[in-house]
Picture: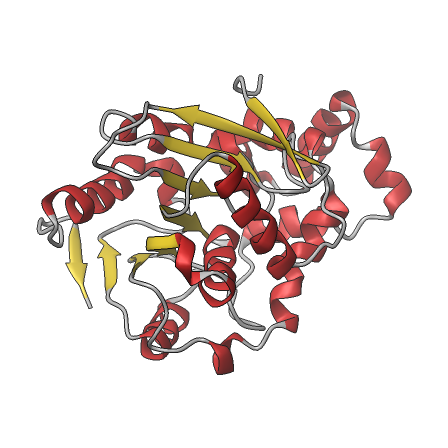
Length: 288
């Protein structure tokens, strides 16, 4: 079952979001942004661990989870709506962490509205065409979005979704560990999201020329990359580093599922940076 959310309507669109922690006069809030075929619940553990020191907001991005589908399924449009969401909550500046497509969204935000950013923590973003390796789970997830719309609508029924997941396990036994790992959240996410909007927002990255618009003047940022991430390989994070001239924090032994496997490590990077005002130094991390 999905976690309990708060709701807010802005510019005619309903936002659903998780809210953790309370106001800290000396610390602005942190906004956590999820990736494609994901929603806020995937990041609840990170939000809970940050909430002792920060007020944390984890929205279902427009078209995902329980938030309303945007009028335009485009990454830069969603970035503009995100600014409205942040301001409607009463903030003019904030910290932001974004994973995968959430990181892509932060790149768009940094181009359009850098004034709202204190610092971003951008984790393995998809930011240029052909910059992603579709492994088993990613091929399954993205493959769902290519189904005909009439079938997608039929899949909105949870019973049908369970059958689909069982079928996927039967046809590809090697997928069983992946699906069992977070099957309930996959089910909830697919059931409540607009799969067509998801696909269009994700692939709108290909329409935007990040390689010629991202500069060293991009807001203060730490790039985060799991050492064994084969979905967004190192070449992509390093190429991004060369454009925006920001450091990479490499998380030892982790892959693209770092959010699910070791959320505390993401929390450590953020807390050390904001509270201790220095780079985390331990055997679990190294810097490039």
